Structures are given as C-alpha cells and as structure tokens.
Image 1: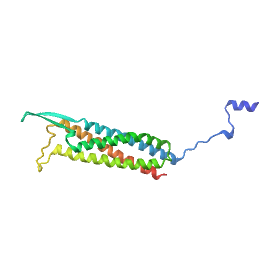
Image 2: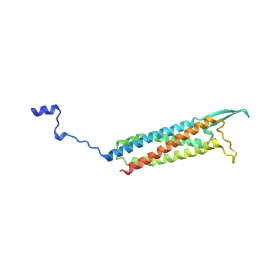
Image 3: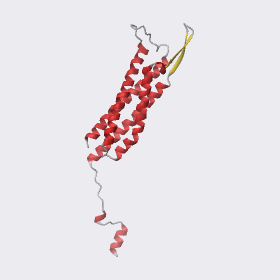
Image 4: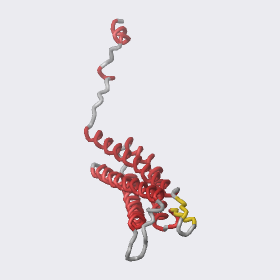
Length: 193
C-alpha cells in the first residue's frame, strides 16, 4: 500500500526512466542543415525580387531635340531578358527545394536527396551567375556607353530605368553569394556523413 502511494506521488521506478543525451555530431549536422535552409530562404528573396524588379522596369521620356517619345524596357535587351528568366527559374527551384531542406533538418541521414540538391544548387548557382554577369555588361554600357562603337550612355535620359536595373543586379549578386554559401553548407553536411 505504501508503495502505491509513492508511485502516485510522482516517483517512478528505475526501469521506466529515459535518459536523453545530446550528441554533438547530431547538433552540428542539424545546425549546418538549418544554416543551409536560411541561406536558401534568403536566396529566394534575392532571385525572385531581382526578377520582379527587372521584369517590371520600363520608362518613357520625351526627347526635346527630336520631339519623339523614347521608351526603354527590359525586354528590348536580350541580356536583360536572360537575367529575368535565369533569376525566375532559380527562384522557382529554390521555393520548391525549401520543403526538402526542411526534411534535411529533421532527418540528418538523408544522403541521396542531399546529393541531388547539391548538384541542382550548383547548376542554379551557375545560371544566376551567368544571368547577373550578362546583365552587368549591359548595365555598364547603359551607364557609361562606348565611344568606340558610338554607343552613347542612355542613363542620362532614363535615370529611373537605370537605377532600377542596377538595384536588381545588387539583389541578384547577393543571391549568388547566398547560393555559394548554400552549396558550401551542403557539401560540409555531406562530408559529415
């Protein structure tokens, strides 16, 4: 009878106790996976934000010397169109890969899906880097022109257009850095298996 009262009061038998131990390797793996998720999440904002900023850029200006309406929009230049497509594709992929990244935080033993994600992340890094680099050359010509080719700078007339496309480049290069960090964190996570 006295034994029953002790159990009711809250004492447990020695056989029913569970000891929870924290493994340092598991904590490090989950930390690296969480860091990769955060990098991936911020890269989503960089790529999609850059694609939206560039894709909605247009400006019209009246030329006072010729009395003509001049228009500048991103779709007039193929490199800027490639920039929008590259960032949109990478942003869409990153959004779709977020659930897999969450799965990697929960299950640290998933190796095959990590390898597939690492390979596609590397392709997306190359795609966004190519798009940003191509657009950078066009933006540089818009700002500086090329006297040898007789291309005047257009940013003196289309300053709003040039500010917006320059801003979208900053977001895209930020996404490139975040994708690099994502690839590095994925590689480190794989090497710890």
